[in-house]
Structures are given as C-alpha cells and as structure tokens.
Amino acid sequence: MRMTLALLGVLTGCAIFAPSSSAVTAQWWTCGKDASREAAQAAGLPAAIDADPHLRTVFGDAKPTSILRLYRSYCADFDRDGDVDRAVSYACCTVSSPGPYAILRHDPTGWTTVYARLNDVVFGFAPRGGRLIVRSPKYGSNDANCCPGHIATRTLRYSHGRWAGTVSVRRAR
Image (spheres, rainbow, N blue to C red):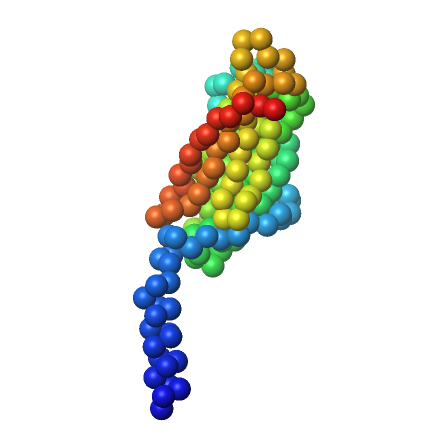
C-alpha cells in the first residue's frame, strides 16, 4: 500500500510539473532531400521563391529555383502532432547570394510553410537542440564578400503554437 501511495505521489508530481506542450522542444535531425523537396513543392515554396521580387532582381532573367538548390534538410515533429515536419535551406553559387530557408509543417491537410525568409544571405543553417540557428553576414561599406565585419545569428524556436526568432549581432572574428 505504501509503495502504491508513493508511486501515485511521484506520478502526480510529474503531471503537475511537466512542461506544457508549447514548452516541450522537439529535436531536429538530418533527413532526406528528396522528401524535403517534395514537401517544399507541396507547400508552394518554390513558387514563392520564383515570385519574390528581390530574388528575381538578383537572378535576372533566370527563375531563382533554376539556380538555387536544396542545400540542407532537417526533420522534427516540432508541434507534437505525430507528423514529421521539415526545415529546408537553399543555396547557390556565391557567398553573397541569398539563401532562402523555410520551416514546413505537415498535418492531415498537407504541407504548409509556417516560417520563411527568402532574401537573407546565409552562412549557416543548423539545428541546436529544438531550435534552428541561422547565421548571416552583415557587411560594412568596406568589407569584402569573404570577410563581413559582423555576423547576425537568428535563433528560431517554436513556442505557443508559432515560430519566433531573436537576432543577435556580434563582430566577426
């Protein structure tokens, strides 16, 4: 009987002090590019990239998606609905070219883009625990493409049903 009461007390404590679903952090892992490419297509991400006015200016007469390639692909069930969601980034030819990235949610109705930045120049796109970390150069007027004076770090986290980002900027080494 004492054992049962002790066990019941522990379970009750776990239930009371367990984090809410919005506070639980999903872990990201590297996943297949082919399935991520299909998810991005279903979410309309390539069409959004091709329609973006800034990207159209950068890439001239060519469709941006004819130059940009899926570069990184990560999976997680960030919203804890039992479906695997994805984060994708694109890259192309030069260090100073934009590298669009997005977070794609899967649910019973299909794929949707829940967070996207299409115009950032991206030096790094990787998970850290349940967050996504994006590093971008911040060039001064005299900085060469190889050597930005500052690096901006955007930390993306899922909280209370939406993605939110914080940005910090530090001097480059």
